[in-house]
Image 1 (cartoon, rainbow, N blue to C red):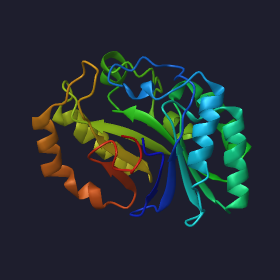
Image 2 (tube, rainbow, N blue to C red):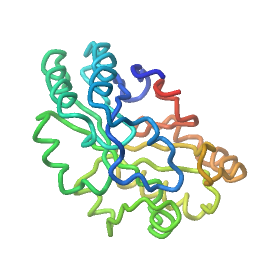
Image 3 (tube, one colour):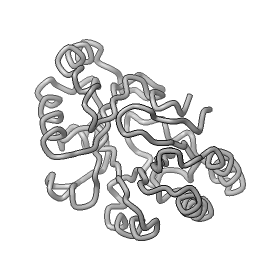
Image 4 (cartoon, rainbow, N blue to C red):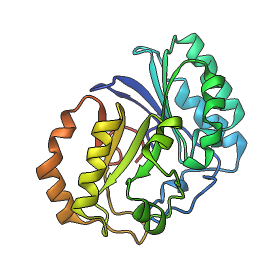
Length: 229
């Protein structure tokens, strides 16, 4: 399992994949990423310390991800990140959170005290598909409400049941309302949710140019950030 990498295109930054407590939601129908979690505090701290020790601060930008939300990391790890921010002169921090924590987003911004880009796994702006099919429990009622808390939506493309119209709307909202975002091509995993290869092919024919848009990360494979397995 790779837990440290550098992203050297678009928004250059270092990235660490840390180990966290189980996701507080853990019910998304398409997600088996939650298997990389732990209930052993000692294990989490050890693994996280090893990953964070690689951070050099060379870009002044750090991204911290885990199998849940930033709020599921041990307090000791959060304090370690805060110390690294000071020691390595980090000025910008990327983290991710589930919608269920939206009322606590300002708390985490205040805790770290630097510029933060808060990601959220939206997957799609189609409310019915997001919450009924994917069971995301991301129940924001408007783009404006989402923007009150989060800076960077993560969108998934190529899931069976999605339509071209859904994806067109998703890309339109992303490119017109957000300066940061992640577009991920869905890959089959251990869940029953399957990839629509024809939809992926159509998307790549029509939206491949977004790979070069400096505002958005584009993941054709989940490991394109250089972490994970």
